[in-house]
Image 1 (tube, helix red, strand yellow):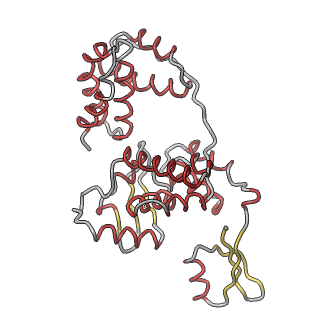
Image 2 (cartoon, helix red, strand yellow):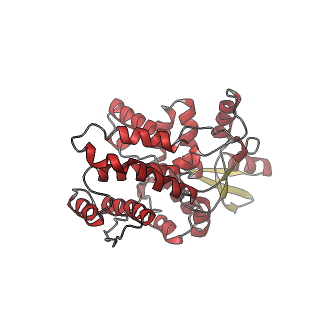
Length: 317
């Protein structure tokens, strides 16, 4: 991804303003600070957001005057979590240029993640184009972040076994994840129709993935007059994966590993989301032979117990 190109797009978005002259001098400086962070391994998505934020601040405040920046942030009519993000972005800029800066702490709201119904997720996937149906299915089935999907190459995927090798975003741990057969089949068809090199990115940048999802969600919610669809963020598909994995395994360390979290506190939130009330219903099935049991497992059923020589299985509705 070309950060210089994205920087130009971001700065053009701020050009038409009576305060343009206030931030013109800072454009090159912002880009230099951002490029330095990229060398340190920060994700492209984070850096693009940082560029946009600093360009916006520079329209109203002198980036070389930390008091001016802090005053602008303090007066801005946004949530404290958003102010905290702005302060974090400016801290990187101040550190890069040796600007004296005493960080102000704003309270971050730690919201309980929204976990959508599987039927709603599947509805969105069904109305997506083939490429984006693959992307959304991968997020749902493997808990990937959009930026992780955007970074996938053929070198990261075993197209026979459906194994993904994920180099985690947000400085998390790498991990191995498995796709379901239907998604793997779609992915194989997608790859065969295109001439990807082994190191070519298979999917669009994370920003494009998120924006495309937003348009689909808005359009479908309006078409079906379904306000619940409009509430489902793309990241909620990752929350769905994590919650269902914990509900199935009751193993929070396994969930932590599969999500690529470094801090267990980021994973523990999912322990509060396993009680689905009236949605906690199952299909049941039985198997008398190994072949029958294997077929049920392939269909997503979980083994429960044996009764009179018959194996009982269940799958969440």
